[in-house]
Length: 319
Image (cartoon, rainbow, N blue to C red; front, side):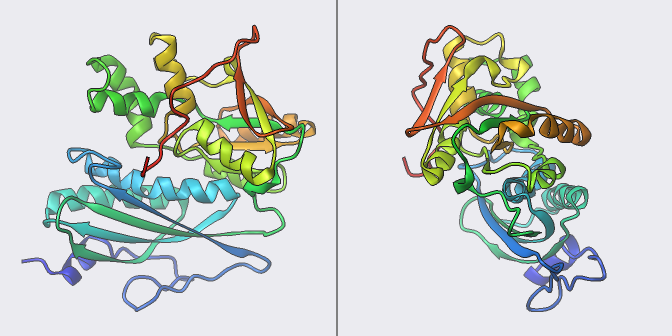
């Protein structure tokens, strides 16, 4: 019989760098560099709401940390450490080994060691809580309220694939194994552009991660910065796998689909070459998709001037 302390010791007690105090004490100790401030973010992943019960546990481990690292990226912050909370209805050693391996693979890649957390028995389904700690120069931190009139609007990566994969898994779209195979990784193994995001500190102005849909999340920047936006639909980086889908399905996935965990950010037009060079150095695709305007809200237009509208701007847990 595995008790709570055995579970932590067996699956979540790997060594941490010597400058940190990790698992084993009541609190972890995480130092900050001089002139830096702490950046902290927490996310919950709930079975049936954020992931399906039969998801690959290794992929779930990767994603559980990636969605939090994406928040650090949105601030231009450097990861320092993370803590993990798990509520489990049962103890399945095979599931735990795979989940822990995925989580640690993401932690190692991001240099964000696991330094503590908690486990408990849940009543139904798996619940995962991750908190990440990072550091950033407060003078260079990317803030939602910093967009300015005339700024370019950029996004990294591609859009729409995660939403299409989710619809296929939920049978909201007709079965299409080939399409699912080409989009599933975007849903289950997101790759937030951490290195690139850190290089944007002091270059970009406003930023956030696209977790609930491009239009909805961009709307948070526009509201905080008291401005509007005009987007060029043809400039949006649509995932190649979506090209065969009907236009309305594509548009809804690209503009309203969540689980992207890429950056949307604004920057002065004079920074275009710098941003492209930084993206190339980091191996990241960055697309300039529009500009900040007067007014409020976002307008999406095609090259011929026609407006693009979608039935949903993004995801809301309580809508």
